[in-house]
Length: 207
Image 1 (cartoon, helix red, strand yellow):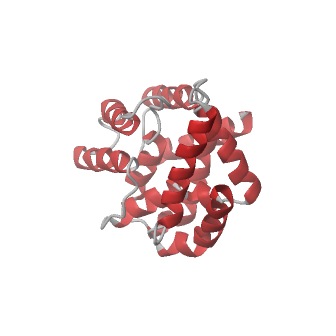
Image 2 (image 1 turned 90 degrees about the vertical axis):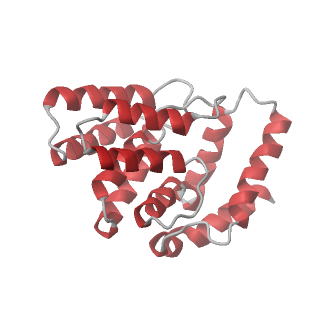
């Protein structure tokens, strides 16, 4: 995890420089984010997930209308994560809005707020950039087989409080939902890159 933490901070330094954050505010926000994504109840929703999203972001940022807003949404979309809560996305969006006043203009802040909330339902959008954000958040489903297996273990650890048989049933329902989506990824880039592998991973996990 140390390597992911180092990458996490390197990516933050780039974002901080791009948005011209002052040293004090940058350090405060990086510490807030690092503390959040290394909390003990997290196994998947960690610095690893954020780094993986950011790696993809840097591959597609030239295709985005507002890359700064998309990156801000990546940084904060899981900043609040309690496995037994049902409002993590809303709370993450609120925390982002509270701590990022002045980082970007108010209109952009409102947009990022709505995007973070949208990561809860993962519904296709008419918003070009939001579709990229949602695809990056679900890119794990199209990862190589060893990483997908690790992801499944990580999710199970986050839900260790659920009775094992019930967890199996509920997890299968989630994976079947994704498998049955006509197009799991909303952007052509991620459809070409990940759709086939994701459907294969999901098929093997469920059946």
